[in-house]
Image (cartoon, rainbow, N blue to C red; front, side, top):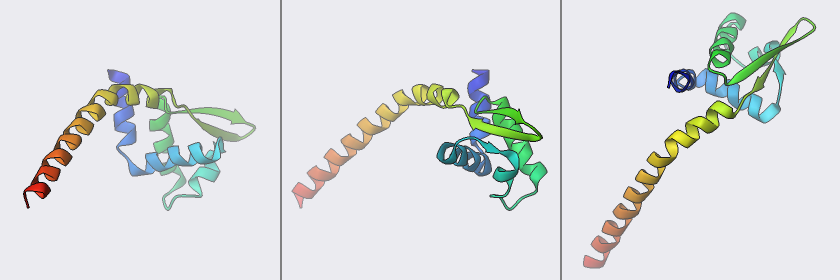
Length: 108
């Protein structure tokens, strides 16, 4: 569960979720190009990338002097697998609520 805790912690930050979305949408990107998209210092963006790397959500490689980041989806699939039973639980509850609301409309 330690790995899942790291993933949840990494996803808690809107900036880190945005970094992941950029990598999903655009593929591999150098740290400098990622940092250009944020209104924060480059060291702050690098810190967010470090947290994502430690959680296994991104990998880093070197190309010359650049550090290039790539999305790693496996931890997100593990998270999705873990959340699936809860999704089913809430879906069933909402279906039940819809039924109650339909009955209330029929009573009017």
